[in-house]
Length: 514
Image (cartoon, rainbow, N blue to C red):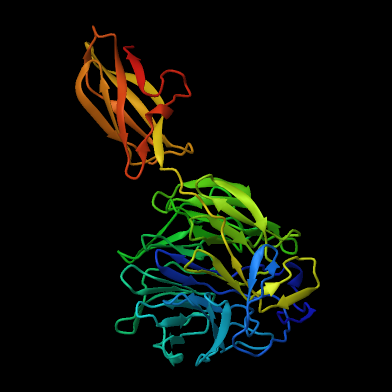
């Protein structure tokens, strides 16, 4: 049984306390941990002990595993090279913790590990290429290194500048460690040196789970977004992107809908986009869930509104199977949500009454949740710090069908090139199976009055134009036929060609002289 105790909330903002899960995500071999901030008072009694047998009960649809030896929140959780999970630091009822423990997924048990040299909360932890673990951020310039083979912690080299906010860390493609708190820095494990990243925007709004790493190694963060002064604040700038290869930053366009002026979380999608959700509109004493889920293409800056709404404080977690788990939000119902990027739909799943837990993807595709708070409803009188742990198993997914694309529209136009000649032109629109524009597709076509094949490449809106050659005035019309549409990692499904205007069948169109 987990051990936990409670007291009445003592903070003046406890009626609207922040509801956030800390998240550890893994993208392309990268481990990322972020911290959390607390706006409530609590007490807890925790048992001592090391290895505990795993119970077989379930927690609201999550399968319970052995509890932590020490109840904690705002801690780090890091998957080690051997598949075990290191949990370190955090807060108890009265102090910042220096204790750490290791979870073994094979036995479902926890084992006490050595204490950190410096107690820390709101830090980030990442497994280095040599298997050691770096803990940084959350408490000035201090860093710490853990050797799993020897169960020994050592003090690491200090960061170039102090950071006191919730921290994000990830391994860059070059093996260096990107760390983002209210400052941005890079750690080189080979020579144990740090450098401050220049030209970084001001990280004025650090929050939990507001940063993610893309498969390319670039990093997308919300913590430099600027908002208007009033409640709720409206975004005046978009997310920031750190381009690791050039050591530069860019700013994306403003979201089309206010995602919330606090508690917005992000997750990387398999298509390379970044999803935003779970935000709160801060109406002073009456905060409201922003609800809207959207995604942004970090390359083009284009935004898309996705289906579904989320609870305020829901945290987005990229699952190993490519889907997105939304969990830990504030609601009267204990429900989580899973998003299918293929179907572009959300499904409700039984929730787990916990927030501020760490969520660590395991090697077998499941997710370990550890620690945090129970009682996720705003109207409750108590906050409960817990040592519970549970395993989330995503619904098995069948192999997704291969990506396809087709012609979604053909529009004709003409232009006079001289008194005796005219030019036929056809604009082709390429869509994927879900109806979204496909950029970078090469459209090949022939005209009945022109020798050879013409090609064009679609822009970000999925369109490109064919034609531009001249015909004599005696030629009254010409017929374009699409012969192929090529796109890497996608198959041309000509049978799906269509035209909503009805002026073609999606494959051929007649262009008449005007």
